[in-house]
Image (cartoon, rainbow, N blue to C red; front, side, top):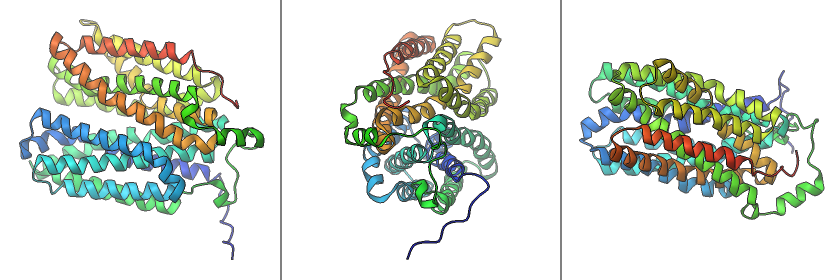
Length: 414
């Protein structure tokens, strides 16, 4: 017996997918990854962690993330994206709750690696749902709204974690991990209730499908083509690597630059970083929509140009304060825009059916950039005694990305 037709909403159910997806990104990346920096100082003090051990904890999370993004496409095809996302969020929440009881470095390392596995297993299928629910004409805008979940998490964790620490004391980090874990589990329940794998489950077509259709012949040809034989996917992966390599240098060392080099207090530096989180809320929707209208190549070139300018402005010493403000504005306003453009771009090169696997593949390459960038930048800063050389390197790599974007071919169906 077939299920009853679900009640019609005053808006397309695709926007429910977007809002729920944003909450999932809020949980899996915002809390699962970006909250760590706020939690580490008190954790390191209580557990006696060295700087190298702190670095290993972060690297362990990335390694778990990398391992999962390569496999989540295959797993999602077997059990469905919704089920995978919910399982991944529960895994994140459970591992974070267990971290709150950890007594040594090894336990934190292993548990936070599991958190990374969950982060990758949730992030990629969430973004993949956008390709199923939206036609290419508005796919960039939709993905843009999803990725801003990380920005909301940065703002909330920046306020919540210090508040709890101030009221609980040195062991406040344990309470913070439990609170974040509870929120992640609650979002897993929301995902179970509202996420759907395909619009057909709601008796709908993808939003915008009346405007543009992929012909059956092309759809068949695209589905048969392996993503690993598509040169454009490798080029997109290389461009995504350059984004991961450069943005994480800025994200890792900017606060240290402000405190250690420029002489700001940690409170003032934290305020600067909060502004990055606030500005990032506009990055995905604005530049995702822009790429829908101007094309993915133009969108990527604009974003990388603004990032390159941001890195140069902080790299040049002794510039007036106004240029430091501009650097933060330029970085924040494009912070999450490239992932939203990449989601839309891969679906245009391999088709919606292969988009999740393709996005998982280029996200793996992107993750390699995230691991490589900070380590090389840190060694460079240690050798030169300043972060300027590291930021200049980031600017140069952003310039290489701009050049690389020019070599992208026109997608199969645009």
